[in-house]
Image (cartoon, one colour):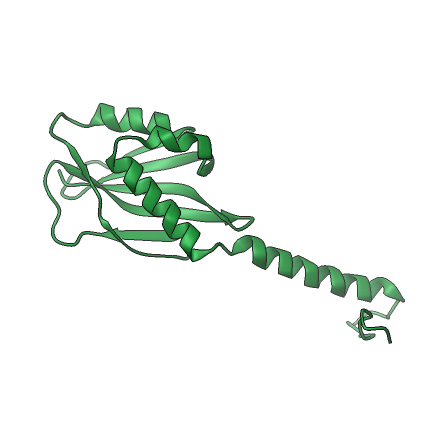
Length: 162
């Protein structure tokens, strides 16, 4: 047996020369490719989340548009900390997100960062070091996916300090 040949295995079907071998090789390659594509470097995920939060605080989300950090669209959710209606928007550019956010903010609304706690299983969680302030919006949660080892944004939940 040459070193690249697979052993002859019966899989409930009669062995037909290279058919089973081809299926086994194909499934091994497919699994390896899927595992590589599904996995993102944790440092890259953290970097993506922190960059989004930094640009959000700087009122400069449009600067990220040239990197296209999401697929077709991104969903933004503004969740009130007290009672109130949740606002949801879906956008094709981060410049549109910035415009929408500015339109819904008053002149006293501030944007403050929260500390990134962790990123895993498609979710980055930000938590306050202390309490939250009134008239302040925070990046609270970021949903992400991975494609070819590169993380991308799916949705962002912002916490409105009311």
